[in-house]
Image 1 (cartoon, one colour):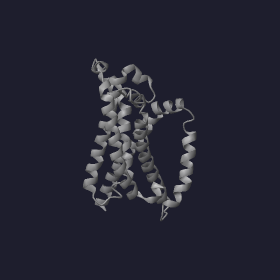
Image 2: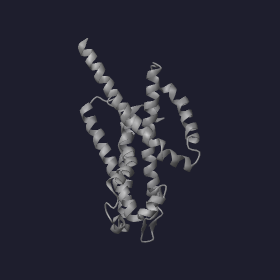
Image 3: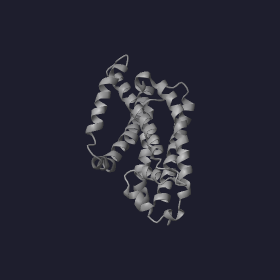
Image 4: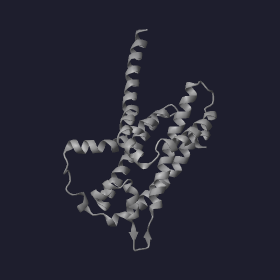
Length: 236
């Protein structure tokens, strides 16, 4: 429905939900802050630089590299490129800070071993909230954060896919493609990852290389092609 209503509707709804997201995120941080134990993050820099770089690669890909997919939508659909550039960089910075805060909370509250063993340590973090034996079991906060983030990420990917396919097929309107591609997306959601183990294998092997190809290699290739074509235009 969001894709059929257009990019402006998606953007305006995101402006509303970003407030809801940060309200829930602040509540989560405030509630879990009393359980922070700084001893859990010691010793700092125990691992060597090479190990730190390798382990940080997946977080960098999730927080920064995949954001290049937004360039499939703007600056093509905006009328203020300068402000959009600032918003893109600022939003990417905020997303990175949110991940840093969540990572710090998981390690300082759950500890290194428990954080490493859990599939979704952020969800386990929400389970630890207990204020006076009255406010507890508020995992719905983390679930709501996930739903908001994943929804808009999915909508943007789907919108770019539908609109790009419409351009390839030279269609005047992209909306007729939403139903067949939506059905394909539903089937893929059930087929691609039959179980959690398959998802873990994909995330630790193929996912990183796929994201680096789409997020770094292809944009660099497009820049090189544009530079070559620009020289040819000047000569002609």
